[in-house]
Length: 172
Image (cartoon, rainbow, N blue to C red; front, side, top):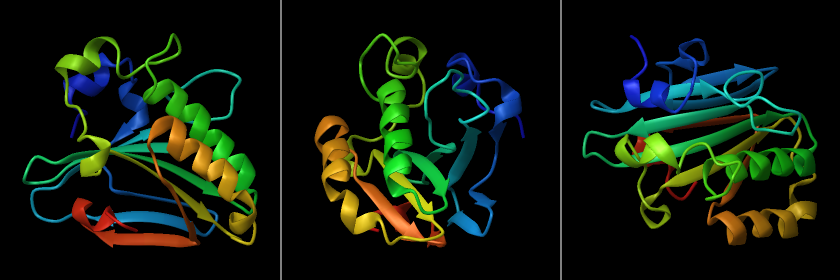
């Protein structure tokens, strides 16, 4: 299934887009088991859509459920360096969520394309799937900085996150 035109209008090469709800790498897994009516697209960010010599998250998922609720999900699969993962998430959000010169989503074509729900309704979410989560308690200040700056909560999970449907992501 080809990607929706609005994704291509953002400048995403179709080679970096998959009609997929999961990703797995080195024993770390992120899976949304779609409910009936859920639409999910996975965009490869690192080594894909977002080019440049800065740290970036691995993947972005765009999803819409059967009720029309949309979410943007930023996913980083990481070994143990949670601080590095937070830096990658922050740099990615800078380009996706802030209205700035480096922004690629909220300016231009996104305004007429498929958006995402406001953060209060689930909007943008960020997940870090770690092989080893011992560093998580040491990086609460950095995680809180991302929440304050971008209004995005970063959720860390050890090894795997598997949820049923887009609505299963809330509060996790």
